[in-house]
Length: 258
Length: 173
Image (cartoon, chains in turn orange, red):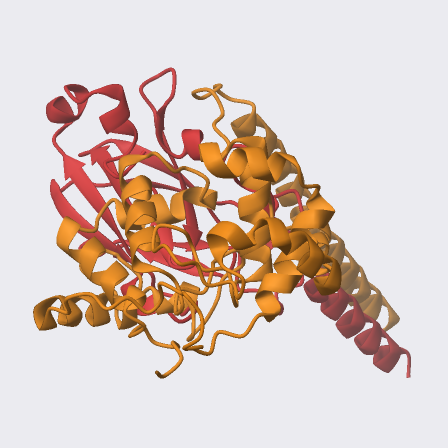
């Protein structure tokens, strides 16, 4: 009896050790394979779209601004972007209710030259990362409700073509699965947001159209992992116009009722 | 009594061996989890490593081998359109920038799961020339239903006649 149980014990111990050794060998093999694959051939020169990466530290810096300090700093932005964060010219973006991370990333990209704008680059050069975070905090707190006293360009009273409206609402709400175009509202709100995506519900149409065209023809390349370049590159001229007109007319989902 | 102790010890050892693989936490092959966190950081893919945007798409190795690097992210595959020659084994290296995604190559039997923080590898051979859709087959968020890439399988001589940039991807570069 004792002899049999000893054999059984030996078997169990050997099988357990064998399993562990097998896993160890597999892991060693795998790690060796990984390193050899990474040090293989050097690809084309590295192109970095933006120096900003949404690590925990960056997110904390970008979202931890002081809104009161931002209020004081924002006086130099008022001329173009409006005193209430709504600009009087549709070519300039509205900043009221903007996302903190998105605002901060754009300012960093203006400073590092990853997003090219002769106007904004000079202004952003005079701000530190902390100033940008303060401004982001201020603008994210501004109300987006309409104010008849203000000289805002939004919402625009543009010719509203019902055919274009159907195209726009379809793309904003459902996207186009056949071409792999995700719906606008799944990243830019109100359904869901991804980190660094600005809300579009209260944005000027002229600005949106310009940016879509810049993404499509490669003038603007600061989107992380080719996100907007892949999408805007597939949109037709008609669709770009339709989407920007829809948001610019205050008819996008999540816009405040007039 | 002795038998009982042996039985309990054996079961404990077996359970420890299984739990050490952490197989119950994620549905990936166990060897991905040894050597903890050697994969690329999903937040800094665009800054360094093999998944920077100029390195995505097909890269041709010394012996005519083809390595396809792709990122899956909410709600796009990058590059969104890829070209491969028919009948040539293509080595895929795929990672995710946010959630778990799954590339399912429609019209073939192949599928690849993209996991943040890990590189999924597989070698596929596409024999039939044509255009195939690559929908995301793992619910990944609000835009999941419209997340779709494209695979173009072209005859081998036609692939050789493409320009280097066109061989890398057929989407925006």
